Amino acid sequence: MDVQRAQDIYDSKDMIAVRLDGKPVWIEHVDAANGMATVQIGSRPTDVQTVGVDRLVEEKH
Image (cartoon, rainbow, N blue to C red):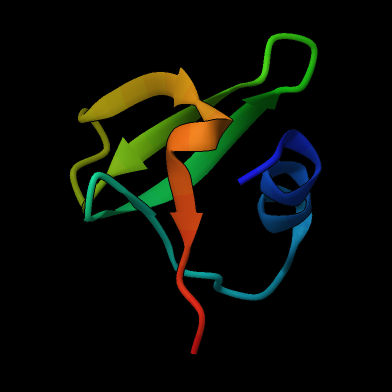
């Protein structure tokens, strides 16, 4: 995924499924300048990682 798409998903009011290494994640913040995103993994609010947006995959339905 590119930075702009990650930002679009973050800004969207719709629920858009995103995965990191096959696991569902929620985008909590996008750092466009560095191409990074902070994501919550699964449903645990304490399980947060900052990763390159290129590792995120949008699920297509």
